[in-house]
Length: 240
Image (cartoon, rainbow, N blue to C red):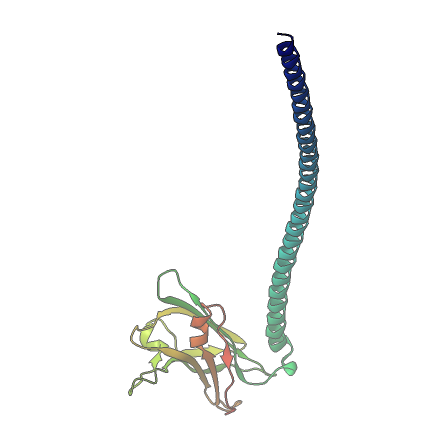
């Protein structure tokens, strides 16, 4: 009986020791995990702070970029407006130089400008032609003018050129002026032709004071259409 009590006491002591060591090991692991959690929390706070700083920096950079882009757009628009104003000023200067100071310009009959723009109806075009006489001692000029749309479709054997007088019944082919004259109207091109160039030919009659004159201008209609009607460019021609 006494041996049994001693054995039981030993077993109890060993069990308590095992429980103690188990408790200590568990507490040690818990402390390690808690320490890791604290480190992770610190890392999370640090990353959150860093992310906030980076976000603020990104927003600042984006705001600077947007401001610079707006400034760039404003400067670009201002530059376009200034170029337009400069072109208009140069056109006016050229026009009045020929009217007021003819010694600065070429003498005789001249096509000052020829422009085409889209009309309100589909396929309709508006035109404006300005004729000018640039010479000293101007006298009245009279003559004929014709605007021809040249069909440049090389695939067709018989190409047909169309005159403005054929498609615009209101086209006035005669002119008579001393300083300048503006001709305006509209036209619709036949669908079966492919226009490549426009020929503007003005012929002034001979008078007792002036010789007969002929002037020809060629414009790139094909390029005008490709550029969506933005610029009707004059092409170089051989001198008469």
